Length: 226
Image 1 (cartoon, rainbow, N blue to C red):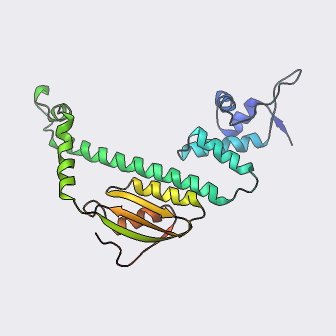
Image 2 (cartoon, helix red, strand yellow):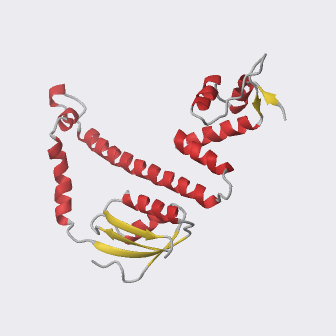
Image 3 (cartoon, rainbow, N blue to C red):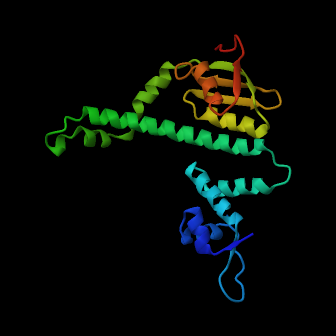
């Protein structure tokens, strides 16, 4: 197996030398001992490990999460379910951030649409909206909650869970859904119960949120009752 200098490793992985050193400091790469003379050399698999780290970062994994994934690759007895649980949790996190960005997008679109685009800055509707007290912006939410007094219960059968971590992942996914009040997912029973506000969501949307993570859902008939 050929040995590579740090420059060769960086070029083949498509990163800079300082990136390699940074990953070494964070414990994601092993730093070879320096020989008595010459340069440190790296084994061939360092390039593949670097590419793994970079691709995982592109998908949104933190350096700590990447370290956990790398540890799973060499941990005896680890199966795909452990990796899937971590990927599903990251998917839930991304879905939550996308929902928040959509909310921000909608608010900005309303501000831009209401602005006449001309006139003195003192009459700017965008600046005026941003200067409103926080409690003013919160009033619509309070009114919406006052109208949505009833809570319904939904019983589900969930297939495709491999461990308790899968159940926890589904609960995390549902916690990000609007209108969800409480969830209880059981890996052992292969089922779950969701309390939700029917004014904010519905059984189909809740089932779809779980199915996006790769699980199969069947809604128990007659359970979406208040």
